[in-house]
Length: 349
Image (tube, rainbow, N blue to C red):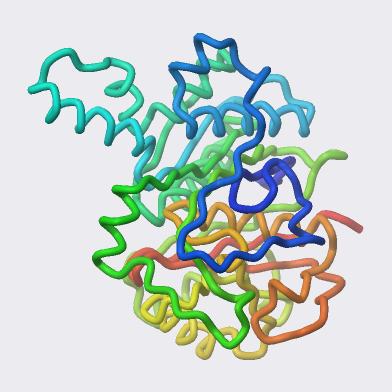
C-alpha cells in the first residue's frame, strides 16, 4: 500500500512554519541556537496557554497546520517521536521536589513530564480517538514513529496518519551533554557548514491516496541496530527493491553530517562504501543537532522534492544547485547504533 506525504512543516532555528530557508537560509556561528517560535497569540485561550509548555504549543500548532494544508479534518492515528519529551517541565518538577522537600508540587509539571503527553495533547486538541503512540528512542525516535505509521498503512488500518518529531533544549540539558562531548562541533573551512546544538519540531500528514496536496511518496523505511556492512547492504537493497529502482536511480543522498568527528566518521565510511558516486546532502548546519534532527532531515528532503531541486548550500561537495531531483535517500545514524534508510520519491510528472 503506497504512503504519501501530503503536508509537512517545521519550527526550528530557521523561520518557523515557512520554507523561506530554501531560498534565504540563515547561518549561525554560535554553539547553541534556540528555536524561533511563531506567535502563539490567538492560537490558545489564555488559561490553556499558561498551562501548556512551549514544546506542546509547537506540536499542537504544527499538527493543526498539517491537517489544514492537506485538507483533512481528522487523522486516523497520531504518532510522535521524541528523545526527551517536554524536558523543561521535567526539570521544573525535579527542581521543585528538591527545593520544596517533596511538598506542594505542581501537578501540571508532572503530567507534562511524561513523554506520551505529546501525542495525547494533540489528540485532545483535535478530539481524535484513534491510534495514539509516542516513541522515545533518543536519536532514533522519529524513525520508529515513521516506521509505525508505514506499518499501519500496510495493514490497511488507516487512511491518514499525523506523524511528528519534537524535542527542546534547556540549559541543564545542554550543559549535561556538553560535558560528554555531544556538542563538540569542529568548524570547517567554510563557516556556513558549522553545526550547533538546537531544537526541532516537525509535523507531517501521511496519506494512502495521492491527491492535489501530495508532495512525495515514502517508498520504504529501513531501520537497523548496530548493523554489519553486509546487513546494511541487505537493508539498502530491500529498500530499493520495494521502490522498484536501483542505486543508480537515486539522485541524492541526504545525511546527518554535522562536523562532529565521531558522528561524521560513520557517515564518511558509509558514503565511501555505498554512495561515492552520488551527490551528498547535509542539513544540520542550518537546523542544528538534536534528538529529532532526523525529522528535520525528512522535512528537508521532502521540500527539495516539492521544488524539484537541491540548493547548493545543502550539497557537501558541489557549488551549484542540483536540478531535476526525483528520488532522495535519507540516511541517518544515532551514535553508530541505530541506522536508518528512508527513500522518498517525487510524485510530480
